[in-house]
Length: 318
Image (cartoon, rainbow, N blue to C red; front, side, top):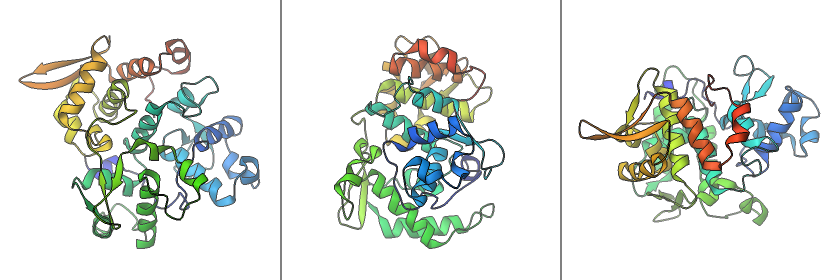
């Protein structure tokens, strides 16, 4: 997948240097559900109970995770909840307080799934497969790549560095100068996707099947990826899911074998999707990937009765 297809409207450093907090997506969802221009109001920060810059960060995270979306153009102050936002963050939604560890992997996938709004994160997950990643070299490489994308307005190196720093603060289990409250209040850090590297200027990804990730969430992400990238196909190869930029293998740092194992478990009693051998290669097959992804999400949370009246099968989960 071309990066300009995956990231048609890139943003840089809109998080105001704040990593995602546990309550922010639910608060953002509730605020916009009640008032579509909640974040555009002068009193937005007061209403949300945070500082002005934190309110901007909350808006950015809610958009990046596809919990909210602009009603009009990308900078339209009028926002609305997405279907996936309703499914997760309604008061009686699947997991409005993010208490289920699999929800962290779901939010992580939504941050990376095309169309992605945070290009630096997309590049970190897709472009640096090394076991040990040098942070200075990675930052320089990202700078150079962005400069050579003519469709994008080039951000400052300072903005790119902020994005790299917040990525590390979000996923790396290193308290640093953060207060203990801030350290504990970052949900995605508990995924253990990223670990310390060989020295203080490096990190490494943790490959394989990790704590909290379930077969159904992996299958949902695979089917969601197929729905976002395939229009008429009735299947997608596991090899592609594992290796393609923007795919599940890079997002979750899982091998083709890992994904096959998880899909076999998830599809064992599924009605809308199967794992099949096609010309000697494993394929995830389906009639409608959106419908199949809905079934997997229902199976993940065991709440079929809730989802049915909320989501329209004709709309994409984005």
